[in-house]
Length: 409
Picture 1: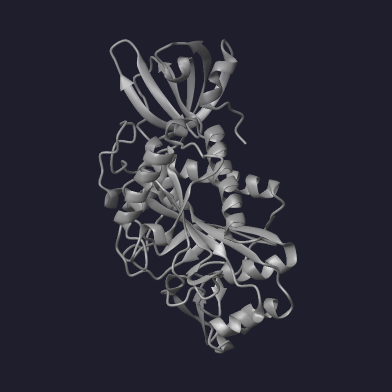
Picture 2: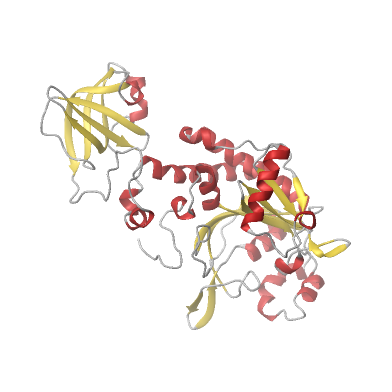
């Protein structure tokens, strides 16, 4: 590999001659001196030169120079007396100026040119947050004794009752892209007791909205030997706290965007806040505003959703079977997580499916051999990143989004 230091490390090498490498972010040609701003994965570095022949923006370069102090330069240091080598040159200009603080382009333009548009520091931020959040999710659950799993994304039956699925031809047999790892993670509770997965899920959503995608990244967890859904909620709280702390540590630019996760997230029962079968987006926003006003937090659990709106594997609420031992976690006005306690006895599944167990025989195997009370949750990574950055459209927090209209790039 090229022996170099990163832009963010220049302060550690004052007075030394070092090599940096990256893209020409911006060039400024003045009468007596010229400046190149070089961008790498850690940030920006300024190079001072006298040569009038400066490479253009997005040229990939390697620069060797002496690290000198300059309070006006990014990070307070710059390279002087440079030796510059061009590693590759662009054959066309980006669709907009990447050096500008804002993004002077529409969302379709950004998505159509994603491989280069994502180089803009502000457009990278949501994805840096996503990466740090996944690391925090893994770290928190690893610390709680969970085992990471990797389950198939081609399945023989739909996971969610009535949900839209992508059908595929699997060597002449009908199959589907997995809507979630739900069946597998429940089965694996019987093996590992506590499991989690980070992976893609597929929903053939006919919606063309700012909050829906046909493919997104789901952070799933499932744990056994729970008393009820409240044990699952407690684990979710720890996972979210881990995601926040990891992002705080790994992405300094996101510090002002991060919430405080309370030791105990407030909760309300569905029957107390709605007479409808589900919460509308407007009602989710109202409840989040109430939680912030009354409890001083941007998080709120809504528990006890009607069984009619939950999948067949959901455990009903004891004493009120029309409601469920399930929950949603609202964050900044939007449903972020869905979870709850599952059925765990084989006879309950037979009853819930009305005896029509044929399509689910593979899934129900685990329950025929004894399963503990268990539950779990699923968190949408892109929704989380969009909420943190304030993006009005989930596509702004998604790498190469797939939706009703977009299949490329």
